[in-house]
Amino acid sequence: MEVGPGTGNLTVKLLERAKKVIAVEFDTRMVREVLKRVEGTEHGKNLQVIQGDVLKVALPFFDVCVANIPYQISSPLLFKLLAHRPMFRCAVIMLQEEFAQRLTAKPGDELYCRLSVNTQLLAKVDQLMKVGRNNFRPPPKVDSRVVRIELRNPPPPVNFSEWDGLVRLVFNRKHKTLHAVMTTKSVLTVLERNYKTYVALHGKGERGVALPLPVGMEVEKEGGRKEEGKQYEEIRTLVEEVVALPAFEGKRAAKMDLDDFLALLAEFNSRGVHFSS
View 1: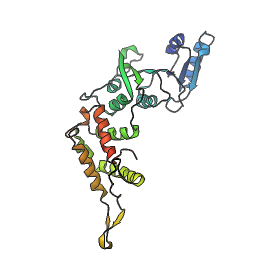
View 2: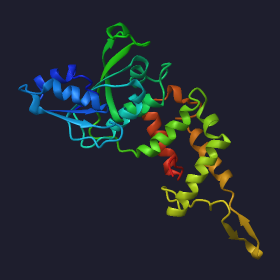
View 3: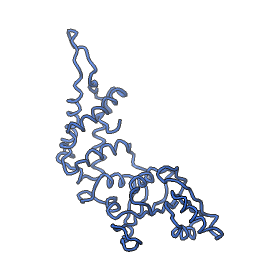
View 4: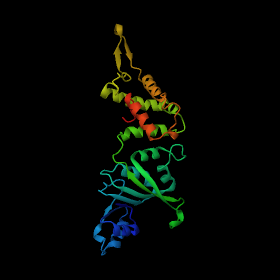
């Protein structure tokens, strides 16, 4: 599958090697151009063109993806490919240089970010080559890189919505400690809402520990008096219990690796604390 064939310069080369090429092109003018390019050739019958927005159309089955795309759709296209099933063999994509470097950044690197962690959880990424801006006419303002992306098979046994919810929170301030990030009022408010939903559905934590009642839910005390559940304080206690564990005390997202995040998510989930509603 080729994303954005344009006038077909790369398409023609791909047709010389592949049994079939499926090209996804948004611009109807380019669709006509690439079809005209191969019309009457021995490989013409092996080209299928899908006209539409690659972010919106249902992608067909493919084993290899090749893409030279507008850089503004790099992130949404990347995650559409990472979520694509059935799994493909690999994708070779040209990206803006800094974006490409973020995909393989390691803990402690300046470019290490949520994109780095999420991509590396789901795929193996290799930097193949740098493409200087002067290779284009007219030259863009930035250099480019070509990367190869291979999905991890089998995929990691983790709920990606939960994972991304946690990673999104801690990378908002990646140089702050987990305690500083996770105990802010805004974060506790989100966790409280998710926690109330979890309690309503499950009634107790995954470790079998009874969970406190949601805010506003009243319980009878001796003598007939009622008391509101103190949910906010309970959430703070659970969060502080996790971030005070030896594995996480003083840790910052900027220097945590995949195993650290997986362990952190497991500890929160085991206490009924979730990052997606």
